Length: 74
Image (cartoon, rainbow, N blue to C red; front, side, top):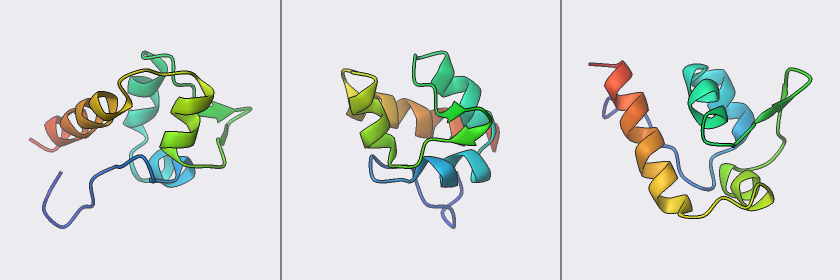
């Protein structure tokens, strides 16, 4: 991610992640974090979605997601 782009946090809205980073959807799904239903994004934050999916190590997931998105820009 370039310095001009904001990193994803637990407070990031899922619909904004889906719109800004469409490749993040597949990455999240592979980790059991399904963020769309009937082609509509989850209406809440990434943190709320991970809580609902009972995802452990949420901070690590967010770090890895940001690293994945950064790798797309290289």
